[in-house]
Amino acid sequence: MYEMLKDYEKTDRVPWKRLKVILAGADSLHEETARDWEERTGTKIVEGYGMTETTATTHMSPIGNEQYGSIGVPIPGTMSAILDPDEDKYLPVGEMGEIVSWGPQVTLKGYWKREDATKACEAFINGIRWWRTGDLGNMDENGRFFVYDRKRDLIKYKGLRVFAREVEEVLKTHPDVKEVGVIGVPDRFVGHNVKAVIVLEGDARGRINETEIVKFCQDKLAHYKIPKIIEFVGEIPKTDIGKVSRREIREDVE
Image 1 (cartoon, rainbow, N blue to C red):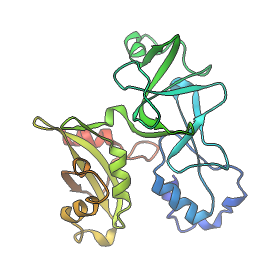
Image 2 (cartoon, rainbow, N blue to C red):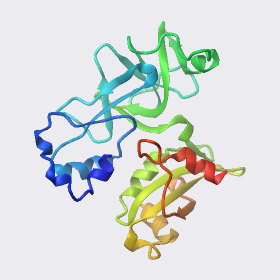
Image 3 (cartoon, rainbow, N blue to C red):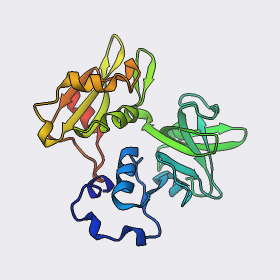
Image 4 (cartoon, rainbow, N blue to C red):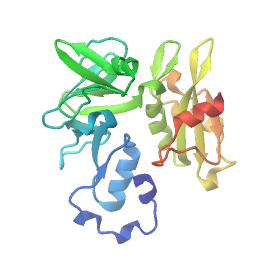
């Protein structure tokens, strides 16, 4: 919604500064969207985070002290940490892993008649029952949390981890890129190749090619994160809430 509103011709008709809080949730907010929104309206978006299994909110950005790209800190009464995606062990500050939470709002019994799914989401460390969110992120030295990707969207190229969102954030800064979705395409030699599906701005179609996109990424991404496959399309599949659907992009490849 914010991505659409920041470019909408009638957005300036709303006195945004009169609103006490402008919230974003349901999915991580692209930094470029947040920056463009502030430039257009003079207001900041406050990010929150949670999931159905945690009865909605577990994290919230401190109002008046927001930080681009951060979902904030755990709300009162809630604990959160970063665990190894594959093992029940804590990861240090700054290291990328899986976000876990625990508090009175987190499901106690788990999924209805799905004991296997419940066990896959539980982690027990020193008497604490953590709930694995399936989201990859990290925590900085100030206790702020950052979401980068869904665990299922992690791309592994020759054993190296590539976060789809990181590549998308870079590509979205290209002035001729309107929308982008990044996925991993299975390859039996390297694991996965990074693929970018791109919608160009109208006047750039036919003018921008794959070479231009790769060149744009060279000083912004490590070599293994630069898309090996680039496809230009007229439209990218979206979820019900208007986010790029990587699942549908993957299904198109399969």
